[in-house]
Length: 299
Image (cartoon, rainbow, N blue to C red; front, side, top):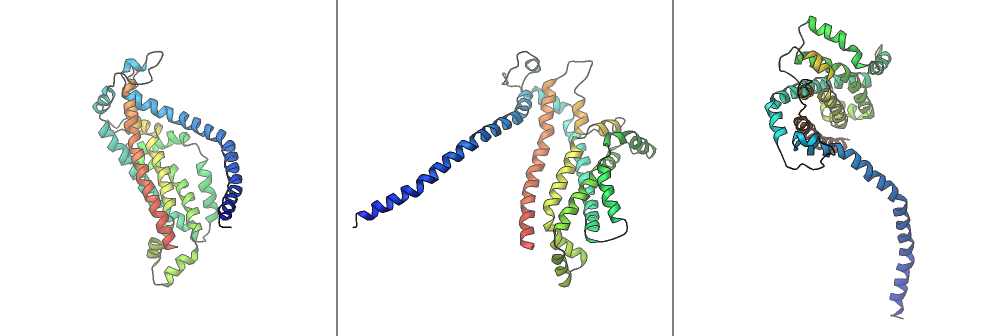
């Protein structure tokens, strides 16, 4: 009788494990094509990044040969030397100044506006919400000439004027997006803080703000990308502003019709241009996780 127990137990394991293994094999067969497509899509997405980084370490002659060389041989840092010789750090600070000012001003204004349209009822509220959507449908490029004329009249063809221009398309989107996050916060949570003796500002900072922190991060990312990558307005407004250019304008200056294009310098400048964005996203990712945790605790 004692010897039959292991047999019975082992047969039970076989009976229960066999269907599970068959189910796993069936799942693998069904998901394998999708996994292969995902790998192919990832390789296609990563290839331009690889080509940019590898091209930054090639000689310019290797970049214009046919067939192309897939690996930098010899390894060269001439492209980075030319990029730094073109005052990269100076234009990096100009871009950071424009981008950080745009994001900071847009966030402050949009938080107050989002709280107003989400928490209060006032005349014209519905029209304001419709207008926020309608403004986003206007092509931003079509406003270039009137904005340039107005900025020229007020002598704002400079970095502060460019910041004002960038805020215009960013603000409607950030207000609309943050409104959704504020609406998702129950009013009872804020009212409980007011009942405990908190002022309206303190209740917002201690209760509502941690809960909408992920929304602030998402809108900040949108504002950062919009201001960091914009070229047309920056080229037009800063054309007469000496060498105070943002990085997209600076990168465009490497393409000259009267001389051979230094593609290795362009690739190197593109890599340097991308690094601050990657660093920003790494910082923002940590803040997003902290905001989610704080919101869960406060709720």
